[in-house]
Length: 327
Length: 278
Image (cartoon, rainbow over all chains, first blue to last red; front, side, top):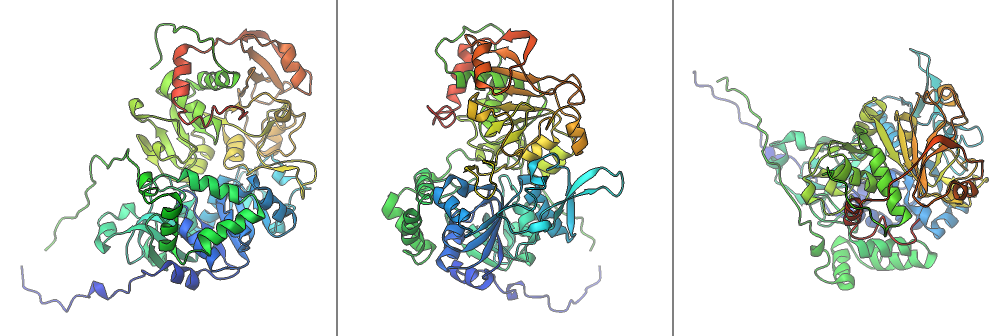
């Protein structure tokens, strides 16, 4: 083997870190009138509260499971959803009937597929769901109380076999706000435990802000790149937010906090309740650290720690990567 | 875990409990099960842990072939995204994997579904009640994957408490097609044939009056099996249309003590079996 003198190798540490505070991530990357994907299995509770804290306006909230807080805090005036959590709330329905926000109903499959089309850069995607349903009825399509008009879905004949399919428009959220288990400073992020529509929602998005339970050293995800849900090249900001999904849960870390969840759902039922919730958990604290401190005051210092999962496991075997040396 | 010896019959059980147990019995042997939100998660867990350990249990959030060590299961999953579903699953991916590749790709044998309403053709409604679509009397949260499964699964088993408000002449809003308006309607809508479908209720089990998965026959609900102690007249009084009864009407066995014990064990927080829930 001959000695080769290589030119100086690049310094990896020169790459700018994408770590920032939740305030800055939301302030910089969630803009008024944006369409926003908040996850479902990877619910970003802390980002949702931060968006409300900053009183973002005229957002379109997109997800299989729809946000309650954003429309009721006056931040979102449009919802695309398969499961509108708010329907259980009289106050939500009152605001909906008053025209304060509009809803377009889809299904879990079709939300995921619209994201997929957005991620793939194609204008629409066909499905065989929705056929035979009232969603296609003339007096329902376009959906009353919705906002997409004729752009919601269309029955077309397959150009190949001629059979009817439902064409769904591609959806490209302006910004995704997702909570994951691990992320690194480059923005590489890993979520595990049933992705729902999360991967396609992320990949469809023009901007992505990630909150992570743990910020892992840069080498960790790169040592197991098959684990990465979204590569950092698509991600704008990373925020370290332990318990960032609360009061919802995060696989492998903690379960949902039942008492706060119940209180949240109860508060969202009335105008006064929404105000109380916002006063206490959104405006009443400065940031997520403040939220955690308030949580300890209200539910006890050990309440969150008490949610830690105790039936956990790790893979029985690690996988192995490698190559054969050539010099 | 199915006992080879007949277990003693239970006497102290509710109709909801027998509905759940019967749904599990009817699910056993189905092959690849697509498990919908709500009660189906509970009833299919009973099927998996008691009646048919070989059942392939999948939920739309991404889980395929959930096969946990039975001794570790201390509760039925609370919803389709409960992290217990990661334990022993053969695959955990996302909704494109499950609702597109698995379901639309034709790899599911049976979907187990719930809903707010069902009508005589087995159509489900999970969206709203009321004629004015701007101001529905009641708006439900929405369909989740219920529509997708009803459109795309080759068979559907619906679990639904038998009450007048849940069995209208026609669903207020058809989110999830059964036989839509009768024979040939699925094909006319561009959907594949479906069946044999079942509806498991708190008083009996219905199938549908069609021998060829929706092409001919009236395609209407037909009482096939009765719960012990329930008379067909009671069901006829609840349904807004004349009750159709199968010629070979059977009576369902009361729960075995083992079935009941396992069912109750799987719901330690009484999320599914809560008093007054149905």
